[in-house]
Each structure stands twice: as structure tokens, then as C-alpha cells.
Length: 387
Image (tube, rainbow, N blue to C red; front, side):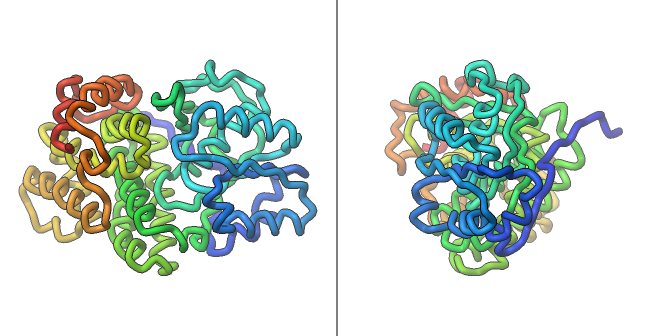
């Protein structure tokens, strides 16, 4: 029997090579006269925002821009971006970049319009709104932020805190594979594994809203990501692989936006917050070890999706063995893609593990979705296995 569920996603999605240069057409319904771009210095140095800016300028729009977003953006940065958007009298917000830029753009669109205090918006469905019209354009294939109602930033230097609300879903998501062609190999690898984590955790989520739509999207996301991640990493100008990764990332984003992620993310956030490890890599470091822990109760579930990533695993009939092999093969994939695979590779020592475990236990909104309950001792042992 299928239980009751709800499913929300972005209002409109455009997938097309070169679509960023047509933003004046695609987004005309919501831009208003004074759009404001939110991005980061790396995007500007590569000129990835230029097709969008040129199209808007040629069409007569008055453009503002905040381009100082950093990874794990702190609260102070978000406040500055909001202030500049207000000073521009922004009629809409356009986020261009990776997950950090898109997450900041969401909060700028919210607060620049509503004037609400972010301290009252943390958590699930606490944002008041309204928000400015919002367009999101990802330049990485990983976070799926363009289709999620979530914005994560860093508060008090280390703590990751999120606003979760349908208000943060954009009016338009533009997926332009051409913007991802220059993505460095290590970023392609880490963000690609990140997208896989979204799909895996969405499929296995203990959330009451785990639903057949999310599970179907998660399987297709894993199929696309598994079949194309190596090509995207090792043949970075392959437009077909880049497009498949971007689409897979989006589908995974849709899946976990409605069937929320769990312990992999809960354990990854303190690694990113305390040691400034990119989010995708943080997920990759703990992924196989969390799956191994969960296999005690979720082996059948992981066995179902394993062949979507590694088709040859369909030949393993024993679900426990298939699930264990799945976790091992994911660890091997990270290594093959050139990612660090041990916490010690990032300068993390055993002495750091108690604090990491304590901080992970604060991520209650994520841990409640994990197939298997975790104690702080369990979390410590998972970090220890990843060390």
C-alpha cells in the first residue's frame, strides 16, 4: 500500500546547452527590471557568468552582482549579499555557481524581500516570506540545489545551519551543460559522489515522506551518474557526459528534497565545518562506512539500487553480499576518481573524532531519517573506520 506523501520541486526547469545565454527569454516572466546576480570569484574568473550577464544587458536589464561567495558561506557573507541586493533595489535574484552560491542566492531572495530575521527562519518551514523571484543556474553537477527547498550556511564559525522551506524553491532552474565543461577533475569527482549520496540516502530514507516519486528519480539519477562520472572526470570536455551528470544531479536533488537525506550528511557537515573540507568530499569520505553500518537493517534496500550504479552487481543474488559489495565499490570508485579516501588525508586525527561525533549528533533533522538509529558512540566508530 502506498502511503500519503507530498512532492514539491522547482516551478520550471530548462535543460539545454547554451540556455544560460538565453536567460532573457527563459526568465522574462519573473526577472523584473533590476535582476541581481549572486556568484563566487571562481565563476567570475572563468567568465561563466558572462553569457547570462550579456544576455540581460543586451535586453536592457539593469544588473547588480555580488560575487564574493565562498565555500561553507558564513552568516556575515549572507548578510552582506542581502544588503547589496537591497541597495540595488533588486527585482529578482539569479544564483550562478555551485551549491554555496545557490544557497546564498536563496536566502538573499528571501530576506531582501521579506526583511525577516534569519534567526527565526532556521529549521523546517519557519521562513515567513515572501521572497523575490528566483532563478538558479548550477555550474557543478552535485548539490541539486536548483531543485531543493534547502539553504545551508555556516554559523558561529563551525556549525552548519539550514533553512528548509518551499519558499526557497526557485521559479526557474536553468541547466546548461556548457557551464560545467571547465570544471576541474577533483571538483567533478567530489560533486558527482555528492549527487550519488543524495540519491542513495533519498531512496533509503526513513522519512515518513519517502515516496515512489523520489525513489524512481533516485534510481534514474544513480543510473546517469554511475554511467557517466568517470567520463566526466577523465574526459572533461565530453558534453554528453557533462549533460548526463547535470541531469542526474538534478534528479537526485528532486529525490532528496522530498525524501530527506540522513547520516552520511549528518557526519559530513562537521568535517566541512571544522576542517573546511568541500561538502562533496566530506560525503565521499564517510559514505561507505555509513552504508556498512546501515547494512544491518538496510541491506535489501541498498541491494535494490546497487546495479543502477554498478550494473554487474545484478549477478550477486545474496542481498547482504550485494549491499556489502556496493559499499566497497563506492569506496573504490572515489579512489579511482582521485579523491582522498581517509580522514587522515585531510589532517584529521583520532583526537578530533570526539568533537566530530558530538557535532554530528546535533544534526537531528538528518539523523532521524537514517535507516538505523545511531548513538554518539556509533558515530565515533564510523569516523574511526574512516580515519
